[in-house]
Amino acid sequence: MTPAARVAAAIGILDQVLAGSPAEQALLRWSRASRFAGSADRAALRDLVFGALRRRDSLAALGGALSGRGLMIGHARAEGLDLAAIFTGTGHAPAALTEAEASVSPPDTLPDDLPDWLRPAWTRALGPQAAAVATAMTARAPVWLRVNMARTDPDRAAARLAEEGIATTPDGTLPSALRVTAGERLVARSRAYEAGLVELQDLSPQRACAALDLAPGLRVLDYCAGGGGKALALAARQPGLRIAAHDAIPARMADLPARAARAGAAIRIDTRPQGPFDLVVADVPCSGSGTWRRTPDAKWRLDQAALDRVVALQAQILDRAAGLVGQGGRLAYMTCSLLEAENGGQIDAFLARSPDFRAGQRHLWTPLSGGDGFFLAELHRG
Image (tube, rainbow, N blue to C red; front, side, top):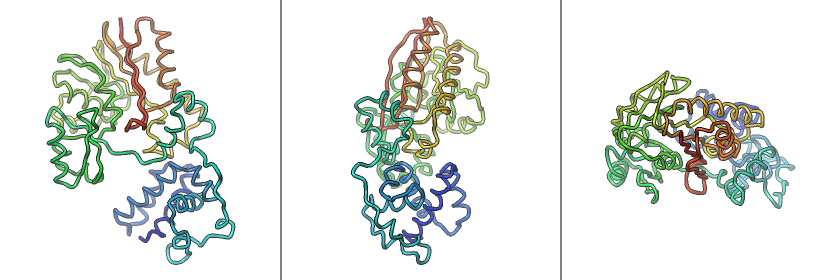
């Protein structure tokens, strides 16, 4: 596909997303209907679509319209591309610019690419960093790997990855973390990954897991396990843990036994966990606001009603998870959100109704520190 044809395809996909279709579904439909497109075309198209959604409002302002076409015109202007060479109307290229489109003047100040209704809550949660974090959310998220320290060390893992064209650089503050700087699409097929030497895991949840004190023999429950990333990270740090994984939808854990075997970790699937546990980790469902660089269409789909529903669900999960914590044990509450209602506000409300728990450490990581937005609160029972 030519660059112009890719832009034309992105226009069609973006129109579907703006009409309410999730971006991943719209891209998948296009891919299935466009068998002629190679892997490079699909990757380039994904970058165009996701890049436009990260900067939706600012690109619409540059392009003169909140439409697929307006976003791609805005993208071309933002990147300093030759509009006349892309919008030619010939072959598979998008139609030539109209007089109105060509005469759009960029505004003096571009929007901050946040939903209007969310901006006050965003500012309350992030304070002086609010604008900088909003800007960081318009960039593509880096790819991070967690080195399985139970099987190798960072230098050896990096060397093995480099043999397959995957370049990495260490985080500098967390030994297990490697940032992929080239060859990111090769990771999941690499021998280092298949041998369990590395796992794909963002830097912020790696930091959250590293912040938890562990000792051999502890009974640990990954309560909202999903794919089991937290359980695997904890197992790699302290092989002597007795770890169980639970999820309200057990199918989400379908790949965990194979991942654990690959990593050399002993993790038990527990569909009906019974306490007490020494440590319960609850990475709860959330708005995902900390991961909007990766799922930018979710930023525009979230509304107050949906946020209220997820906050209520989090409170229910917190109460259930707390009941599994033994006396003297800990509850580690985690979200991939930046919003106070899901983070500190949620924890303060829990402590107010749970006198047998007391507050421990709290951390909020943002994209300004390298990874996704992520929150950790540790609560102590007794």
